[in-house]
Amino acid sequence: MKTILEICCGSFEDVKTAYENGADRVELNSALYLGGLTPSLANLICAKEQCSIPIITMVRPRGGGFCYSKEEYQTILLDTKLMLQHGADGIAFGFLKEDRTLDTERTEEIIELIHSCGKEAVFHRAFDCTKNLEQSTEQLIRLGADRILTSGGTPDVLTGLETLRKLQTVYGDEIEILAGSGVNSLTVLELLEYAGVHQVHSSCRSWVEDTTTSNGTVDFSYAGEQQKSKYEAVDAIKVHELARILADLPQ
Image (cartoon, rainbow, N blue to C red):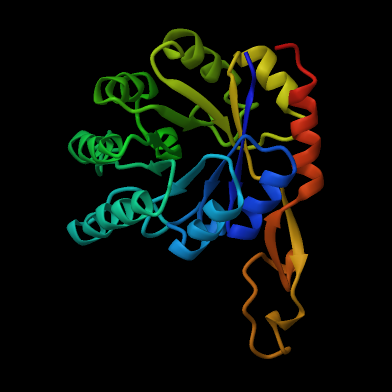
């Protein structure tokens, strides 16, 4: 079975870089430094016009968690409809209650909306913040989600190997398990061999210089002192290397 490489992108330019260097699918966001927020329609439209791979769009109105107000949820539903109308191949989303359990009512509603357009419903790493991963997985299966993006409830996939293996073994025939966080050319083979997953999600990120970030007094940097005056972008070399490693695996 072919291993699918999904690249986490923060712009149309990122999508194009991923597409041209061997990615099978992308997740399109904005504000990756906040964990990924809803992208602009312009980024989606441009990407769909020039890149012929599936584009999953994030729908998330803010950083800082996944328990949303009525007003935030209203914008989530409208963003979902707009993204689907403009060619998104799927939507990445996640709704939790204050007690860190799945908000099943909202999850069911958005899955039905996504599926009514024949697209994929992907529950993102809000999953990793739930109290019981097995219970959450079973709920998502019952609600009809297509895929879960997860690190196994830990900061990165290598720390979560055991849980990822269990999720894939127990539930992999009922829902797709997409392993993400800390996936790169140095970790991907161990992840695939031990956990047995068939899909990986990677940022393949590097830092790009923009000297206009600061004039010495006014400062718009966000990445800390080491990356001052830089922004994050998908690195073509990293995508190409990861795609090459996966292409060399026996099918």
